[in-house]
Amino acid sequence: MRAPSRPRARGAFTIVEVAITLGVIAILTAIALPSIDFSRFRMDGAARDVQLRFISAQSRSVERNMNYIVTFFWTQDQFRVVNDKNGNGLWDGADEVRNWFTLPENIHFMVPPTTIDGASPDYATGPGLHVVTSGGTPYPTVNFYPNGSTSGDVVVYLGTKSARKSDFRAIQITGATSKVKYWRMQSDGLWKLSDM
Image 1 (tube, rainbow, N blue to C red):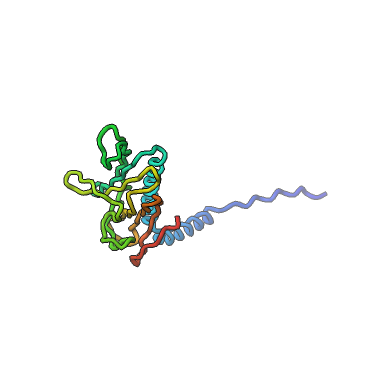
Image 2: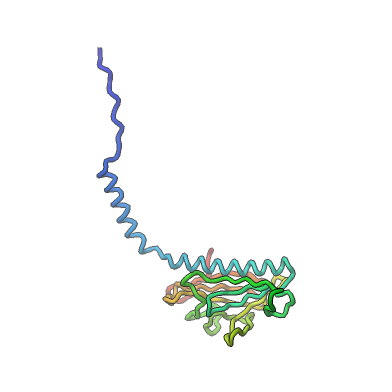
C-alpha cells in the first residue's frame, strides 16, 4: 500500500523578492517623474477652466436674452462675469449679478512674447475689447450678446512667473460666433491650437 501523498506547498513570494520588486519600481519611477511636465497639465487645466467660463457666459446670454460682460482684472488674476440687465456695458450695482473667478495659484494673466493675432503683446488683445477703468487702472472687457456673438475677436493670455514659453496659453473668442478655443505656446515660441 502506498503512503498518501502530501499536498504541495503553495508558492509564495519571499521578502527578498518583494524588496527587489519594490526597488525596481522605485528606480523606474525616479527615472520617469522628471520627464513628466506637470506644469503643462496645470496650465491646460487653467486654460480649460477660463474657456468653459466664457462658454458659460455666452450660453447664459443666449438663454436669458441678456448681455453678459467679462472683465479681466489682470492685477488680481481674476475675471468678473456680470449679467448686464440694462445693456449699458457696465456693472451698475446690486441689480446686476456679478461673479468673480480667480485663476489657480501661480497662474497669472501674462503678457506673452508674441500674440496669436499679430497684435502688440498685452494681457488681452483684439478688436472686440473695450476698457473699463477701476481705481485708475484700465481693465480689458468683452461683451457677450443674446444673438450668440461677442463685441468682437478677443484673445486672453495666461502664463507663470517663470515666463517659460511653454507655459503660455491663449484663450481665443471669435466675435461673430463666440466660439472659444485655446492655444499653447511651444518651447520654440510658436503657437499651436490645442487638440483638447
